[in-house]
Length: 632
Image 1: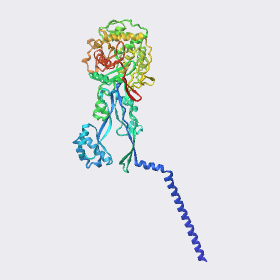
Image 2 (image 1 turned 45 degrees about the vertical axis):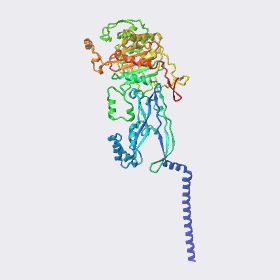
Image 3 (image 1 turned 135 degrees about the vertical axis):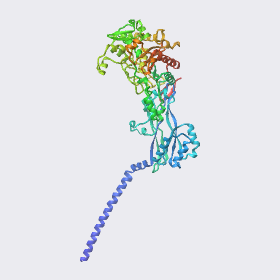
Image 4 (image 1 turned 60 degrees about the vertical axis):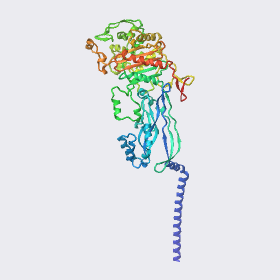
């Protein structure tokens, strides 16, 4: 009985263990089944996507950059095919030998050799390594002819920005260049190795418009990343074309006319619409160099050049306006109740306390009124006006004409100039204003600083009847100006009136007419002789050095006998045609000497060319619905 009892106990124990083991296995298999259900059913989409990501690469396709064209549709910045030669290591039997053979076909530098040898060791064997880009068609042809002897060498075609006008338009257009680390915004397009963005000028100002939207390409790849095939492609949206107000031919002429001088700037403007037909600054630089990559040597030359070719002097050059400022002073005097017939005797100087303020004409001009004083640019007359008007009223008038503040032009880097007041000096320098400073401000010296663009705007507002015209470089209208012509072209709305009495404007306009078209005018020799194209203008010469009493006693040294840096700046402002004004111009020649001798002839020639090229002033091309449309 004891034996049977022991066997029963042993059987019960075995049965319990079997049940426990079976239960454990059931729980294990249930858990495994639940996990498999979770992975294969619930999470199937996620893991399918992960598998696809391992098999499919999504690549961005850079969009073509929008063109920049002038008012006539002439291309000023476009995209050009860029041929580059690449090398695939796994296809080349011997990379060094292949490069040696390639060097006998096209020019390769020692740096190219070293870079390629370095890159092929860091990249997978099937990944192409760029050897050289910007190949000429002749170089491409030579490579193709020698292809059997160049295993692993292939030609790829990309796009690059091209500026056909080189330095003539560089200060307007700017340039594109590679994206720096500080410019990365998280946009994957900016991280593409060959992508370029606008760095200066219009290219920078309208980079978002010109850039466009990227496309995508889905590529099937194997486990090591080798491309097997392209599954799909969706091209992006190319950048929008941009139409400028500039006349590229006139701009080229203006630039070439200024190149006779070391450093100069000129602005040509439509006085009614604000269109800038030319905006030139010399010397310039070739923007194409920035696209392909500057060497340190070239960059240092540009940065250290004392003539500052990287600076757009038309909008960022600060210059004392000299006597070109006198029309503003005359208007301030007229507004203060001074008659244009008010006369002053000019003996060649004015005494103020123990100081003498000299006229540019040593012997003086004798008795002059406002017309003659403007015609002959008599300093003493304007000294007297400033004493009666005061600095604050002169400055207020100057600001109405656009001086002393940025004009908001469609370019980065514009500087505001400076129109001083009593409060400004006290806040900035901590000293009270002196009457002598009022006198020298009246002839555009002292603290007064302007840019060539501001002087052109001042002249335009003088000539158009006192309308506060605003300059612009693009055909797109300003936000507040929404008028459209019947063909859809956006046109500038009526500019606000500056509340300058027309009788006052006629006084100044008559004086400027006498400057150029009367034999006693300071710019008579530089007049426009073509009937119906005559100009009215004002000369200006601004000193960059102090003339001592000893030098005056011995005779003031002529500009041509001075070192270039110590010579006066030459300035001239004008509008034409004188009896039906349409265009305004401002010319500044750094250290050029006299305005009548140097700046006025340049302005005359440019105004003649302006009227010859575009007598109607109506641009024959416009941007309508995103397309370039020619009129007629």
